[in-house]
Structures are given as structure tokens and as C-alpha cells.
Amino acid sequence: MSQVKGRQELQDTVKKENGTPKEKKSWPKRLLKMGMVPLLLFFSMVIGLSIGYSVLGKMPLSQAFSIETYKHIFDLMFAGT
Image (cartoon, rainbow, N blue to C red; front, side, top):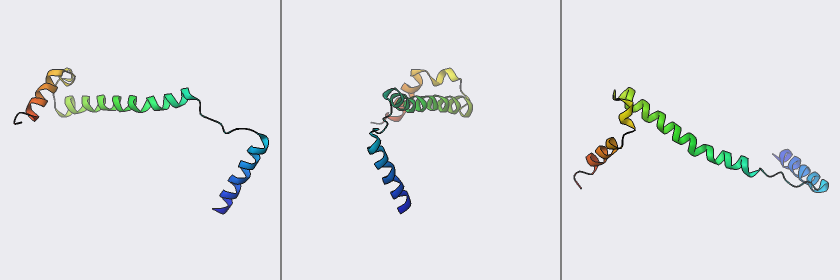
């Protein structure tokens, strides 16, 4: 562990002597990485919904994306309240 710390200190002093600032990630790359997470979550939700509704539930896939399906589920869940 002390070797790693010593090596890091050596690298820091070399960077300070050379005057090269730390490299910053460019904002388009950072934005792309941040945008990929919600996009992948959305696609995995759609795929899981499709498999669960059509394969496991043996229902037509078109009903999985119908708003009436979710209104019916909501009514079933909150019927007694």
C-alpha cells in the first residue's frame, strides 16, 4: 500500500512540474453516459413488460401498451378505498 501511495505522490509531483492540469472529461461524454442509464432502464422495462404480459400471461402484446389495461389495474388496486 505504501508503494502505491509513493508512486501516486511521484506522479503528482511530475504533473505539477510539467504544468499539465488533470484531464477533465468532456461534457458530451459525461452527458452521454448520464443519458444512457435512463434509456437502458426504459428499454429493459419495455422488454420485461412485453415478455411478462405476452409470454407469461399469454395475452396479446397490444394490450400491454393499452391505457385501458392500466386503468383496470388501478381500479382493482384502489377499489376498496
